[in-house]
Length: 482
Ligand code: NAD
Image (tube, rainbow, N blue to C red; front, side, top):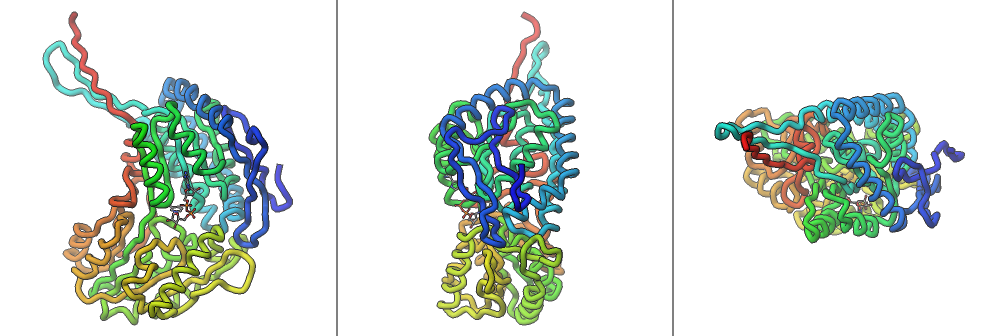
């Protein structure tokens, strides 16, 4: 069933059945480009969550006993369906999240590739045999940890939920996934791909609800063995603490405030073009988005001029319009934050080189913004903007730039531009980040790990490391002769 907007009726998926919550309570879903209500999301009660937990317990029994060749085949079939349905997933994602269609459809295609990668990696969750005494077989086995409670936000409505689902399922773990109440239909259609691919009932359960209530309930349940969260640092700390109280490990993919260091020997035009392109992807609502531009003083004017040119070339509009290259912010909270951060920086002496305000139109739009003369005490240089704002700050020596880059409690992504191999090695060595890109600002790739250090969290997604959090290690020492 779909609405006038071509938006599907949202359902939860529990024990292999599409359902509404036990009480029928819902919350509205808003198109951020128009501020119109386009649907409603069902909210789970404690009884719904208990059904999902029971299903996951049973799902674990089924999924861990399913031969890995069969598990891999189901995951590949789901990847095929995601690719086949990419246009529809993209359309729904743009309706509820706002990003341009090309970005949301591209995300769906990349998601299918990520899933294929994890499906193949399911076959490589090797243990090892350790040389031991004669008559003794000493092995190390890697086993699925058990049911996972996963929580994902709204910025990548296809790729975000799938990162948790594909790693957990590849490792042999079932999930109760709480996707964002702001982008629920994309998560629902993603889960439908797995269901249609033949995933047994109970292995993947999708719920929505009041986030704090859902997470408290799921984390406390003895069924859940791992807590996996992507989102903000404060919420991550809260959930990790809760998990710790009941001795459960957690995987925390949290926010950052990524520095870009443009060294004196870099080409300022190339650096500005490449970092501006990354800055405005998804309207800056990416955990690895470049967000503090530290530019050598000799290049800063040329860099700024080129960055402003790139910002002014961005076509802001409804993501459904083919010409749009940047959609609205995903929700009203982001708009309020960006207005606050800009006003604070300007009040402290910053200069708005372009943008700086919301355009006169409905929707949560905010103009691509470049600020210079931003003083070190501006909130924008300490708080992750999660939006299309670029503060540009000059530096004199590399030591100073590295100290500024590392001064915050975050450590997710960092970027550097230099033509010197020696300087590149220095940046690689000194920057406190889990993800470093040199001479480009490319996004995540499924074949390599992503994750943070310091307050940006722990654990990795992507690469062979993606399965680590979902597997436990068991030592088996077997004396052959009685
Ligand atoms: P928020 O902190 O309110 O929520 C972040 C996410 O956590 C949302 O999906 C929300 O539903 C969920 N959440 C909130 N409280 C929860 C709880 N008690 N239990 C379980 N889940 C809970 O922030 P927001 O306004 O949605 O987003 C703003 C900030 O979040 C951004 O500034 C950014 O720092 C961060 N964020 C990070 C990522 C990322 O990819 N790391 C993605 C989205 C948002």
